[in-house]
Image 1 (tube, helix red, strand yellow):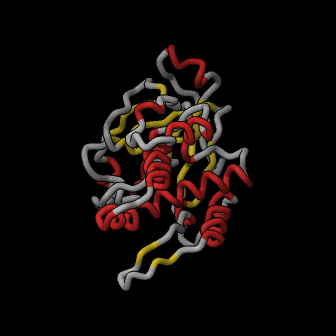
Image 2 (tube, rainbow, N blue to C red):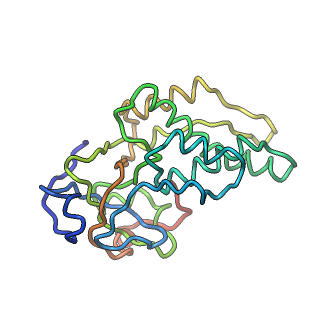
Length: 238
């Protein structure tokens, strides 16, 4: 677990079964300030409320993820599967696809490679993303924006989590300024394999992939990481 700390924590009685015997304590940036102390963050199987109503999307995702998806999983897989099923028509839609879909395609590739080679590891589409300390948010300036908050995430000691290098995320088809579309499925496969195998880059930026359910501990002042020197940019996957 990449140096995960284990310590006893106190949470509401209704979540006692989640952290009995102790929990690993990590930190998550909650962009929407939607999490509160003692809350249990679980998978959702409410596929009828997907953002897209494209025919077949809920069937594909419910068959692939019968246990449900995390918010991250809904966001990325809903869009990718929808666009793949309904196709792209018109210059405006094509521009959107070429600009946005590579990141969704990366998540799709990561999930397929995980299922094929590393089924014992937690799915990114059923997990929450955390860091091991508040200080590490200095390396994620693009996260610290808006009216979000830092919260403790309590992962039960029998829960599933893994520390991986986010610098190993990559791939997807890209449109260049000269109109040339580049990409390679074998290269995407290799990149996903390096990520899941735990390969570390020369300048690693680690993230903890923690499978749901988890519990929310304390809410920490959202300015803590900013005071440590982070800048404001657009948020990313964490």
